[in-house]
Amino acid sequence: MNFVKKYLKWVSTALVLTGILLTNLNHYPMNIFFHGAGVVGWTIAGFLSKDKAILTNFGLQIPLFLIGFYQLLF
Image 1 (tube, rainbow, N blue to C red):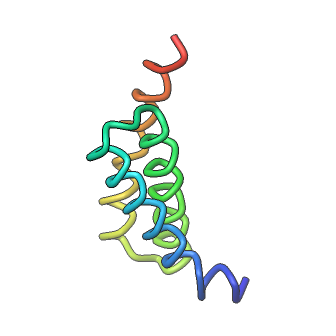
Image 2: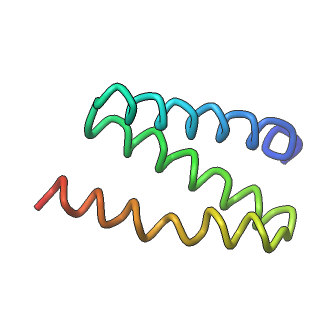
Image 3: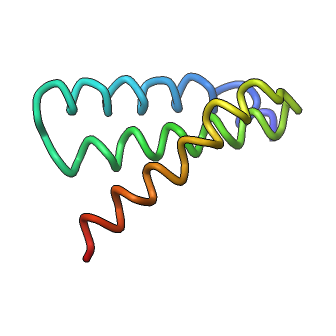
């Protein structure tokens, strides 16, 4: 659990930034995989730290990425 508290935000930030970079470089669908994984990580971090602002920001992004995954698969 200490690893999660210590590194989850850093790893999630790196994933989100990588997703943004891939979006700017027009590398679809890899951008939604990286950015989506970072959003899930930040949502978990917000849940563990009971931070409602983080949960609101990143938790509301999850359905948007689910739409992207749905568009990719169907």
